[in-house]
Image (cartoon, rainbow, N blue to C red; front, top):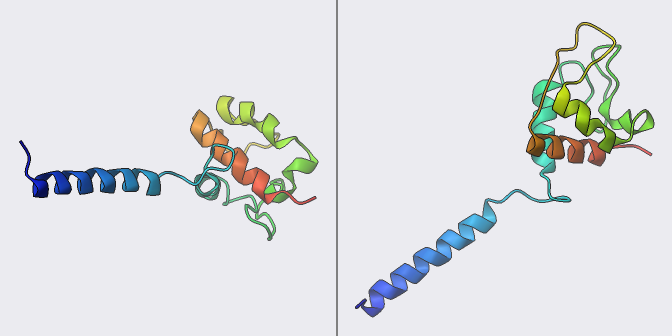
Length: 115
């Protein structure tokens, strides 16, 4: 049989574990993590593309990501991110992403779009 102090300590531990599990979950935007998408985009794409709300792309053939929706429905890019993005110029490497990464990338791209 547990003493009152042991039960109280155990309850506090369970409460702390539940609190930590809630705090460490990603901030969902339609079930995705925009911050994770931004991190992936900046890691793999910022060398050539403008990846934020302003700025110009450093590569002339790389469109700024904030204008992608003028050429493509953002959600239609999911397949390209899964199978490998193919472009008309040889300098762009081929990238493939996992489903959770793709959801985050698309959420970030959607957050950037200019009307």
